[in-house]
Length: 506
Image (cartoon, rainbow, N blue to C red):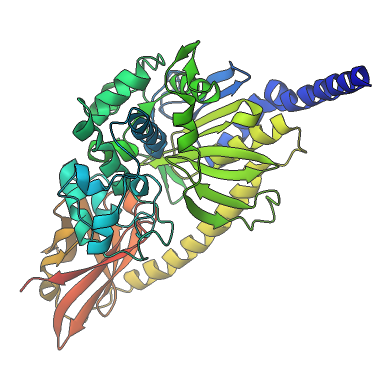
């Protein structure tokens, strides 16, 4: 009986193995090249780790769409943005294992200047809270200031006290980059090194991640780095590399699929790489334990997904009976993903150099399904149709606003009445100037950013930002008794969902 069971298992395993590998061996390249064209993705790199081996590690397309000889390879650098968070959380979990800090320590024990708006929250925030997005903020709240700004790491942390939380403390998930920054900045307070060097000596060097770094200057000067792109009116526009060194522990790692495959090999070998212990397995397990409910999964297209939670630097979800451990990253001109499924000994990295695509996530799902032997469904096309519908709606709404602008309506007041300095407690100051019979907004903490204003009607203006990442937004002024009191400023949801009221300084 036992022999029959073993033989049955071997037959099933053989069939399963053939099914799971057919997409990877026969169709992966064709699929990627076809879908890159559909999504207008100039360059992509992919790594797949299975059963302790790197089975795919290669680049597709171009680093620069206008330079046909600049092809993406496995060493090509991308900004991986929030995929940095797993490195930060693993670092803190390692320090906790070494009893140099506890995840239950109050943050103020190590960082006395740390403060939130709510005194109770300030006194009770634990290190764990920083790493699992439960401070009470809305997702991305405060990032209109934090992202790409000219403040120091400490100044960004200090500014948390000015943010009015949308939710009560620990009651709700809200993705917080400044929380991860704060966690990373605990490292120099409890060890003998900075966050940047801690990652270098504990992960990058022992994992032979020779092309990986944490600074803007490194990717800016690297000859094998991808040019970042965004889409403006359905056309690819090259972007500069965003400098987020001051958000380092949340977002500043630059890497390539070859290096990240080593990170995944370590994740899937219980903390070992090439037989050498990098971190204890309990450290990895700590990062993979659910702390915060993100959402219930109610998408009929993914019926076997039921819930999503956040561990420490990782999103956790169920899919087809397996635990998926993953994270995405988005920076100006880049969207990327890393994923491990320990029960399948499977890891995936997808890096892309345009930020208006979901091919990176669709391909990850396609690879997972292939290895699970599930029926083929083109996730890329499904998501592309959804995105095109959304963009068609946005384009139609923008066209209505542009038609209003073309009427050259007179504002409610003379343009000079809207000029001056305005203040918001979270952001700081902006200045509005009249230049060449138009209004322009200048941002004190983003010196290269300008918002160009055109009248829509009365005291409502259409703002076209000089950096297309910030989008095109409606900017309304509040006028009382023929005097401007304030202006409401917002940017693309990619950066911050919130709108910020700036009060005019007399």
